[in-house]
Amino acid sequence: MEEEKKKEENVELESETTEKPMTELEELEDRYKRLYAEFENYKKRSSKEREGLYNMVTGEVLLVMLPIMDNLEKAASAETTDKSYQEGINLVIKQYATALEKFGLKTIETIGKRFDPELHEAVSHIDDGTKGEQEIVEEYRKGYMIGTKVIRHALVVVAN
Image (cartoon, rainbow, N blue to C red; front, side, top):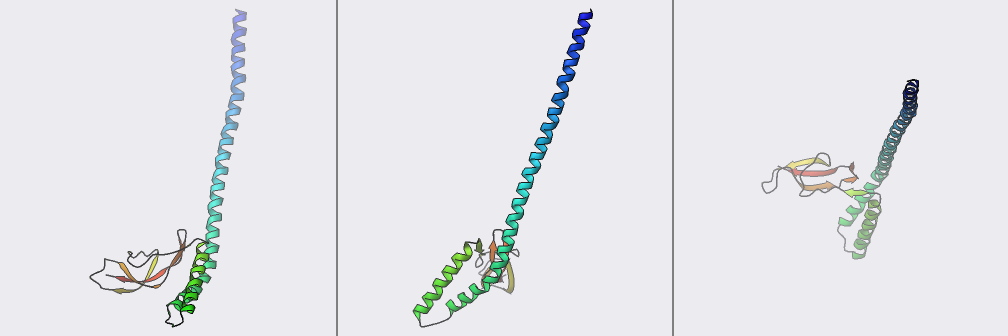
């Protein structure tokens, strides 16, 4: 009988000693998993913040450069008899547009599209039965965006 009691006590002791390290191990594993998840969230959050900051700074710089593009386009649309001058201006516009696109700048589409206050700014409204409702019929100034952020709204004329 004494032997049976000793065996039972040993079994209880063994289970107590094996349970305790398992509990500590589980706690450490849980802490590790939580810390790892926190770190992954931190990396994602800081990556988004960096990307947002980059787009903001790039947008501010490009916003200063957009009037130059506007003036080049006005120069290209001016009437001239000098074909070399016209070709030169068009080449400069193309080169400048390519350089701006490398920074992620995209032109907002306007003519024939439906008016979207997130992208467009209406400067005038006309009634035209041949056009759809809230259809853009004319563009006064191009609009631009980087990614999903609008850098400059397009100035447009909206029908109906």
